[in-house]
Length: 145
Image 1 (cartoon, rainbow, N blue to C red):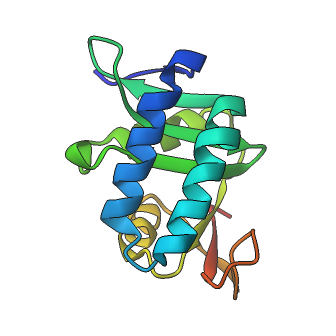
Image 2: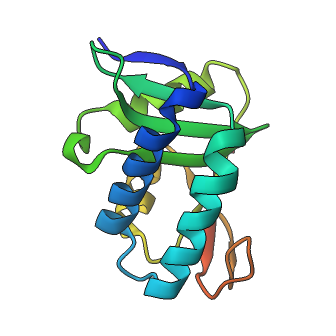
């Protein structure tokens, strides 16, 4: 059984490790300096402030997490050691339980993530040339509707 709970301040170091390892495994298109810049924002600003849904193991160790902003999946990262184990799907099902059609932005170069969301029923709704920070990483806007 997959256990999901809300994040705690004490989770931040482990959540950052999950984020870093997942990005390293799936975002080979990121320039090293951009990765370092984004890492600082994630570690110092995003993770300490966000309310996240966290998949944990039997010893309460985080394995994956998801952030939501209204109808948008803001972040979803799974420890690469647990890719393919249904953790991401369980997080999306948690979000869907709110009864709101979901949206998500995915880096165009992250074909694994695009495939994941497409298998869950998301479809292309638009595209942006840059990411939300204006960096040169095109985004695909996916939606359930």
